[in-house]
Length: 314
Image: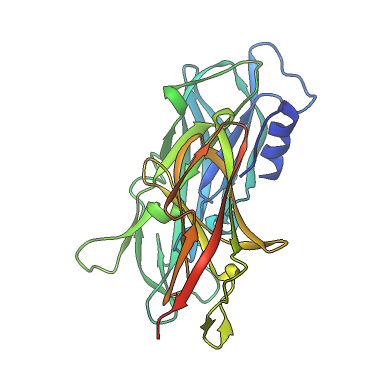
């Protein structure tokens, strides 16, 4: 994804960056803060997954630490996390907070619904309430979406290292709300789903990007799939972190025969890279997959592959 190497680049990234949350703490601009204060901005994003829609209403965001609780936002915002894949929506901009040490962000989530593939060519909707205001017009709710206490005690997100100090310095935090791993069916065939957020916070200074590229071997003739030649644009790149969290992006045409997926704001570390193809397609690449890729803080790593063979099951 994006390499952030300068203060100006970091500030631009917080403005222009499914599910992650990014907090830019202290002065991403020319405004100064008074002694004993800092600034914080929050952006919302998400990593793509198999859920078709994941709509949440965030009623309040608090910053909690040594100085108590500071309310950053209390105007409800309703958004579909899946529209934010590899992009962001700004929730809070330049909120002034007391200098100090902070340990948690707290998100009060008062309602939500998800739409999932029902296996019959359509989608089924599960909502926190059949009258949830965020439901689309005419929606038929198939079952309940359980959200234990998120509307009261809130969803608590620990900050990196247990605490973050805010003074006159600038700090950008990245909180990954992984939609693909945060919703699941309740056991027992009850027709209910539950929201059990998988959330991780990191310091964006220790994050980087990974661009996964694929080209077609010059000697390879693509097989026919559903009456048309298979294309690289029908492949997706899949990366897996050391904690087994995964991110999937479709390959897009970058020109000159290169198709690529750009993963942004990844915590530095080692990742496994693989590809998925349409059902019935088997393939090989050079180098073979899964392959390893190292993401370095402040840099963009490129992993390039060549599609060497592809066949379609009869």
